[in-house]
Length: 608
Image (tube, rainbow, N blue to C red; front, side, top):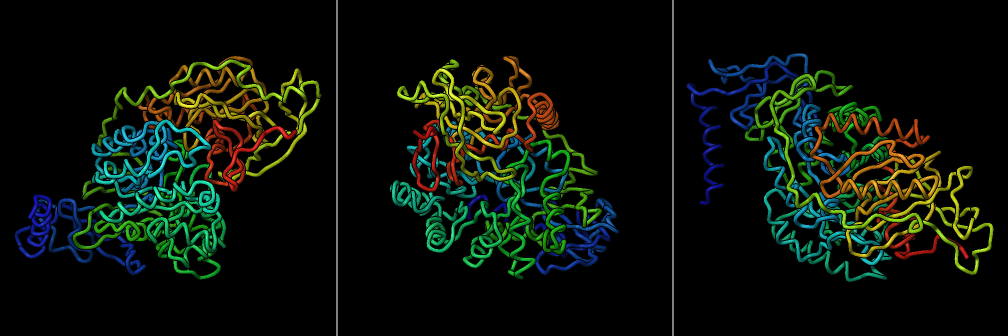
């Protein structure tokens, strides 16, 4: 018997002794609350007795109360398992794992399953290992689902590191790694099959290895049905999830196929209300319906909450509160095969959320492993800040750009023309999907000009990893920017520098500001910095500020984007970051150029 098994056996024996020896008692009893049984979908009065990190008993715990037992009177309140966010990215919050957790834990979320896809694209294995190492310092459960492929579309974009099946043994054998993350490389099933079938073989090698050591695999299946959906499911080893479901029809077919549908409800992409109709209108079973945040800005975390707020919104769509709580507890625990999380029952881990208002999902107290860690929305324990090594803070390997580098020029033979017809990505609020459009723009000295009247602006991706040196160029419609420019090094998924603006002068200044900061967000107006935020960890995150400080800074940037640049778009930086995501339809931009996603090819911006 190895050391781990001996430790577990001793823990179980201690629990048995406490239950059966009249001279031993619980460490903690939550007394008189209304228990939320996510196994049977019931509400009833019951005490919760805890010994060490584990639940002893759910029921009448009077006999387990001794002289040193801490008794908490929770009558009139509801007692739930701690919540699980099954798919999220710390990088999207621009926060370290520690600072994100400081904002999240008081809201009742006690387990996070993070996908380090973003830092993996920039820094590869060493970047992901740095993030995993941070999780080992925290009091709650943080697991990772790692990418088996970066970039997602080789040949159409440039990442800082190419992750393949060769990296899986190193990554997947880490105890903090739950499995393989979203398999975006096979999201566009037919184009990949026709034009890059070698990606399928490499993914299958990774998946096969993951399954052989008991790890899970997550899918990514936007707008897939029928044979394409079936092929994607099989590519994940026959049981996957999908967090890119946006319609009721998709939800129905995926649930029928046994896919765990991660209903996304983050800061910029909100799909739960549409997905949940498959349950409220069609009566489908909700056991494979799981709520996730995917991408959240710290401002929203601090203002509205985390999974508690998503549960609240789900209840507002007509779902019974206990059923909604199942979607953040037992449902994800079942999907991932967690043996001691997601339920409160004898021997399970005592991760507990005490709720004072069930409809509003107001969290009164939070316990992690039997210890109270938050009350009334504030942490009651100290979690030291975490500083990343300098090796992950030098990821921008490009010299400053010149204005002429960003110009979108017509061909020499059309240089004398006064107008040009161009393709433009159409922005869709609160989605990472985009539309397509064609517009007629003015040409001056061979350079195509932005048009505020039509809301058509240059949109570019500047490679920053020191590999291709390319700049992809197109136009963007619908961003509602009135002046200046915005650039950032957060640009899914390869995280080159993405920039848009009302004039080329401000755009080049914005890009160079990001380069000089070694990553971050920059807003420029009339050649001057309106606002910025350095993100030196892989150009994605910061450990220079607390979560609350970052929340305040991003809120200020959002206000400045509206007040100074006239941008009316909700969370503009997050939306901007997704217009380079080549795994979701229809058109996207990378350092290689304008991408027609469904055909897996580069298309010209200017229509000759």
